[in-house]
Image 1 (cartoon, one colour):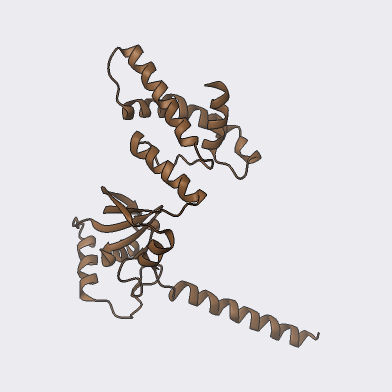
Image 2: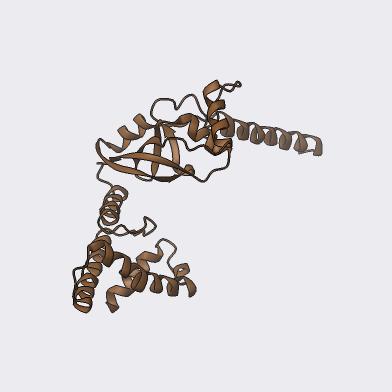
Length: 240
């Protein structure tokens, strides 16, 4: 193949790459809540109250997923008056009401507050205050079973959602450790200790120190498909 034809072919390939980039960053719609709800069979719901949510976890909308791209920028060129008012209020530091979000697993969908999320992203905010209703997936997959076990563990203990396990039944093992620790604390202090108090003490005095050792010695590199909490559970099982 001659030099000219090679350059021509490379140029065509480059133009396709550039064209593809433009389509993926500007035109992609948000994820539809209804479609995700149907695929996960997530119909049972519970109210999680109001809390801060990371903006990068908000991936879709309940009713307006076709109006914004995946960066929550309006597809139309003009800026509506409502969005301008919200941005002006944020710029002046006014406190706006929480947005309303639906949650399926680790993803969030906007029920009310699309413009507030759009403005918050444009201002570079990391989180936004939101009232959350969670829809629980019912499809019987390993991922969903682990998600349900993790959710129940976090709900009982109040511990961070960053505690991730990859094997079914391991959250129950951690909870068993916490219950033993609760009994130990009550014996030592001669007073009643709640499960959440015991969980916080276990997390601070037992879990975190061992996790620090695992990370410091880079043991996780030998187990690429496992998490540091997987290793914690394995090590502590033989030492507990």
